[in-house]
Length: 111
Length: 231
Image (cartoon, rainbow over all chains, first blue to last red; front, side):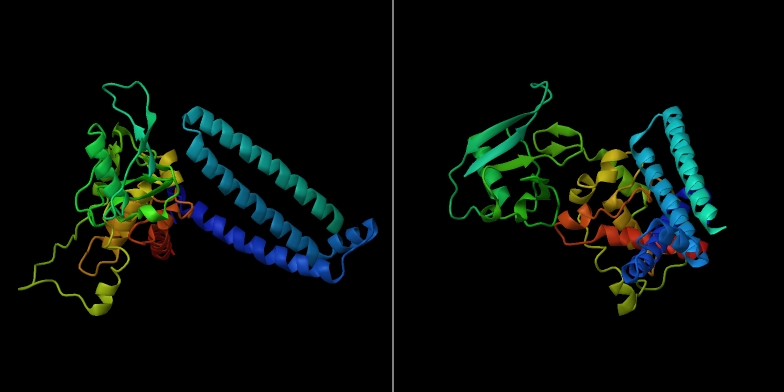
């Protein structure tokens, strides 16, 4: 697969969408069956390896999907190269910080 | 019937304007093109393209009540008044309802819209099986009216770089043609972040195509062909 042709973004967008659909449906069903009510119950649920893994997977898929979407918006609307690179760097940095923060929260409860 | 027509003559106007007309139609006037011809008799300064007047040549593509269509096959009885007639959106206007299609045809030429086959020609024609011929259905019927490309948001954003639905539909038409031998080169050419991958499957192209074709589906099939090739 060639990297800079748009194909990788096309594939990542579709795979991440499928992961989000599967994981969010499974998590919604799980929460519908027996939703945690108290804060302690939420912490216990998030500490379970399966829930923590699913949350990490959802977060990864969400950030990849968001990156492809934002990249597409920048490619379409921001034409000057310097401004485009700046905006893309800012989006990448913002998404990376959010991803790291999400991972830290999930892992802090699970480990 | 009331009409509101986009008027712009770069030699006389600094900016476009809307002109209203009240037109008395005859019972034989059924399509928008009939009304335009009658309007032209009333005001011969109105400029528009038309040729076959039966939905085959694609010359009279325009924006009718906010939607791209062919004037010759759009029924007046289906339209709300005042009927607004404007040139194809996003294309440079030459005059009134006539647009400059240079960029559109440059993209069309870029996909090499002809069968490429360097093998020695057979004694008679290059035969196709019925199944091979069926693969061209839904692709070969395009009349290049530009209704789709002009109504495609990614074409608005990157008109010079994104090939647009009409050119990509034609590209798929030659990729799947059993007589063509240049599919790998065609796919190489299309494998580009702008030429092909700007399509977001918004599907305005399929929505407005006067021949009921589905360029978005053709584009998706090119992407899948590229994916299969690189897998």
